[in-house]
Length: 218
Image (tube, one colour):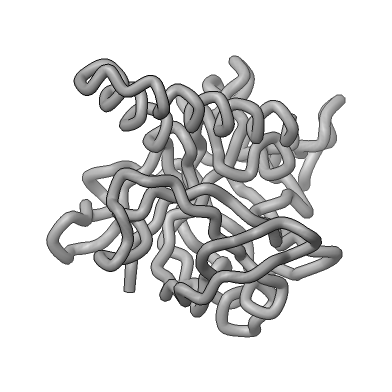
């Protein structure tokens, strides 16, 4: 039997956290480095990428969210080069099998097992970020008056990670084939390193723009 708490989570007989109808991903335009998208693009330049409703609302995409692991920070799980086996990384929870799309957002249930992840959430680390495979369509266009450089297609989820800074901001957080991580922190880190090594003040504008986008999400 689940017992309610003062926030949104419920706690079962094992002291596992159960959080229903939690946002997992959303439609919109998000910044990515060229190296995350295609060898045809400038690797260290920021491009705006559309995640459209018709892709996020695909039956295959929604199905791929079901029962995937929840981990602490990103690494792709698996046995292929560049991946890490789940038992080595550590799985802290799981997304349930009740996953659905509504008003531009994918929702699902979270079940969190580990005490360490619960503690991190209670200490303020709440944003969620997908690790996934997808294809990139390099056809530019506009969405709601905003320019984009590419479109994500055929998303298949590998895991959901708890991160300090998710690409989708506070809209996608814990409520108490290219590899892609939906974390914005690595972009800012790379740009800061380039600014320091190259003395390129133009990169400061990119960092400021990313920070502005985060503030707007929050």
